[in-house]
Every structure is written in C-alpha cells, then in structure tokens.
Length: 181
Image (tube, rainbow, N blue to C red):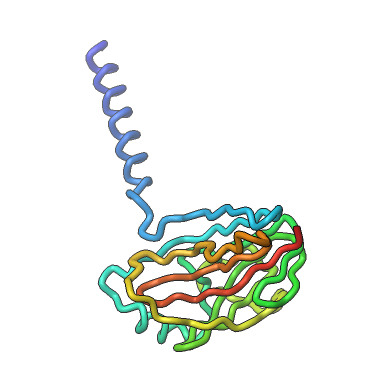
C-alpha cells in the first residue's frame, strides 16, 4: 500500500512539473525592455519589445511596414511616459503615459503619440492620437541586430534636451525631447 501511494505521489509531482515546464516555453523571441532616463528634472520611461533581424533585411522590413502603422517594436504597443510636460518632435505633450507608433518611410518616418495603452500587435486605432510629427531616417555604418530605443545626444550644458533614437539594422531615426527644468 505504501509503495502504491509513494508511486502515485511521485507520478503526480512529475506530471505537474512537466506541465509547468511546458507552459514556460523558453525565452521570448522579442524580449521586453525598459528605458528609464532623466532629462533634466523630468523622468521618462519607455517600455517596448525588441524584435531581432534574425537574418532578415531591415530595409525590406521597413518597406513592408511603411504600408501602414507599426507598433514600433513587437508584441503589444510601445509605451512612453513623462512625469512632467515636454516638447517632443517640436510639439507640446502633457505629462502622462502614451503609446508610441510609427509609419516608416525610406527617408522620413511619421511618429504618432496615442492615448491607447492596451493595443496588441497591429491593432492601431487613430481615435486617441494626441500628436504626430515627422523624423528623418538615416543610414548608420553598423548593423543593430535587435531593435533598440535609446536616449542619445544629451545637451550637457543646458541639461534640458536629448534625442530618442530608434535603431534597427542600419536604420536610425532620431527625434528631440525638450523639457523645462
């Protein structure tokens, strides 16, 4: 009897552990990343998922994407937030949390800041667009395998501005963020 109960318990533990391992499924193909950065006295945060080229050509991907709006990352839409009012792409933006979308082009991208915070994939909806502006797309001399959003070009003197850079393959798109200290 004891052997039967012990065997049954062992089988249940084994089956449970296999189910839990199967659900995990390994690392995400487009891992989530968070960028937190101070610009002057303003805190900015960007949360996005990072697709990789995985042998694909970034220009071809962008040409496919420029037929519509891109979530600017993978999986759910990219989120961007500021704890104080800012100017982004030359336009005023109130403090708060938003989503970041883009329409890629060969030499220029349209950047869209939206009030939608819960869109999955390509479920873009313009009903809550807060602002749009364009940013120049340039070619860089090295390849960025995994899509990256970074803060660059900080003004070390005035400490009130920087650029947000989107980089993938040999494409770089930068647009300015200015704060009031």
